[in-house]
Image (cartoon, rainbow, N blue to C red; front, side, top):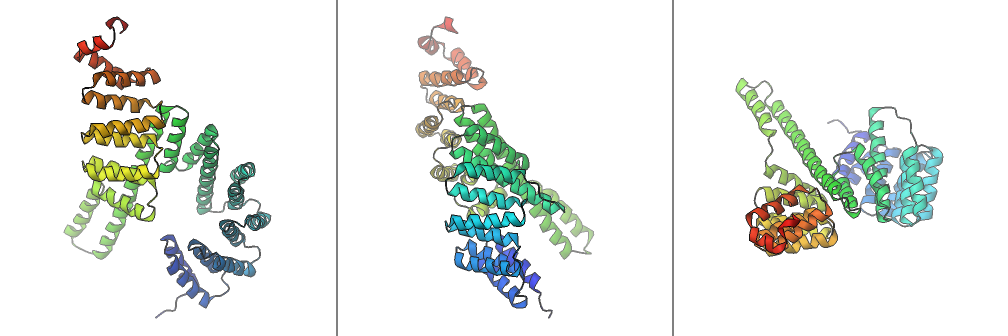
Length: 411
């Protein structure tokens, strides 16, 4: 049996690391170091794994060993700086990042981590300065992977800068940062979600709604792509198993490929549940799962997902709209009204919420309140067609109620 090489143990360790199997990764790195104790990359990778399980002392030992092997190894200096920042030893962290930038002044991640450290210290002016510097520096790019890494770093920097401006309530600058990040990765649901919230805070409800819809649209497209890739890999394996098989077997594989391009709600739910195992606190995933159950008319399951999402982010107006709409479908009109009112309390100028609240009152035959809500929606947006149409229909269908509510000549 062939003896494995140290780099093979490194690659296996990295595979475990990417799956968040950190103890398994550490065991692989140890086996690699038994074969080559002078491999700086293995020492650095093992330090990262220890960092992830919050064994910070061991992580620092590993980074120091990598630096001992190569004093100019900027990645290990940077990783050690991040560990010191986790320990809130900010002065030590800053010294590490300054060392990194002395070795390579165009190292984006060094400038970014320096900015993150100042952000943690509450020195926001410095943080923004270093984020902006990180965006401006142009490292030498030698191959396509370098370009991908540079784009990823830029996206991360824009996103963090947007988060900081958001917390500081400098909303217009936050929007610009998120939009820059979305130019790099237009399928990031979380960014679209943050952008939607910002436009709501600025009272630009139509723009907020557009961002909300774009986010979900891109989210579903991304999962479709994921499912297609999974299907393609599965079919590739089948081809290997049936290599040299009959025409009937080959035709079966082709038919399977065509079938897999049509994704069922059940398949999408499996993907959401898998993602939620890794991140139970990610509100947009709970909302997406709820929307999928709603499309399947599994309303109780959908409501459980929305309720979980509300617990995670009770101040999201569009989410209360989802909850209100679902209660409306379930014919629980009182709870639908409560939900829409919660949304309006958060976003009083959201004309979508006012209009749909009017729909619920209309269903309950509380026509005067329905008219009030639709008029409020039109007050907020004079060209809002759904509310205008419903007022016109009510006037034609219930003329006596309408006359009692308002004089005919005013319309």
